[in-house]
Image (spheres, rainbow, N blue to C red):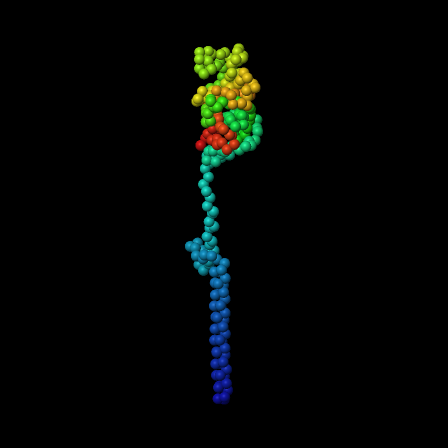
Length: 256
């Protein structure tokens, strides 16, 4: 009898120990699983901060917004659009050729080096050449001064009053259709300084020479065409060489 109670007591103790061991093992397994889940969450979620709107015990995934690359501010003014850089454009040796647009201003370039006069316009955001013609410029003692000029007026069949170096009496000569001695030819475009004109001629063979008293000569057919392309206020440049010369956006009436 005593032996039976002794055996029963030992068996109860063994079962109790086994139960405690199993509970500890289960608890350790649960803790390990929790740690592993937390470790995985820390790898997947850069920043974990519970939100007020989130349910208790839940973790809200938040990511920091990507930084936008810095961009240089660009001026939206018309002077910095199209071909112009800071309101300027450097002429190249080649310009595309387009038809003359009567609604666009014309800029005239008198290239002394090549003996050509060019009519330029801004069309479709490009500087284009609408007409080119041969010219004659001032001789060494009376050169055509390089610079920026403005068309002050223009006139068909102008009269001509010679300078005192040609005629001390300065007798006026009638228009070309009445007097073929008029060196201005059929038309004249007057510039705003130095008494310089772009005009026709009564001596066609003089074109492409340094021969004038400072004005820029053209054939009568060429000056008649250029006459219809320019208006009062348009810009004329007399330059030693067109290539490399800088024109401005405001020359083409482009607003700043």
